[in-house]
Image 1: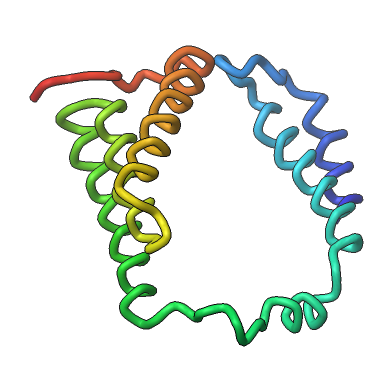
Image 2: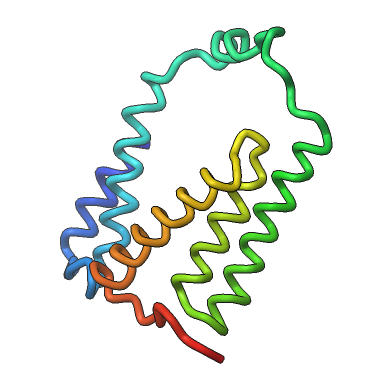
Length: 144
């Protein structure tokens, strides 16, 4: 895998890489190649799955109920649906806040307050990365 990634990087650098805001045709293959090299190095260093499975099976830890698992899946799907709807009508900021807030509520260990704080932090982070750094053409706020 690392060899495949290295060959991808070698081929990608023969194209125009561009910048983060204006990516050239070699940018994406370069990033994929770097990812493959990193993955090819990390996979052999990872622990044996059987050992990890035994460590994770602690009979003292409560296992999630079916209702909790369904709640998590429903909140994540609902958050994605809200992002699509709110992104179309209200813009990036409310859509991102709703996505993270509703998805975070899928975990029963999160409170409404912690979900709101996480949603606010991710909304600010998303605005900085996608609007300022990447100059994404997605309105931050919109009405209608």
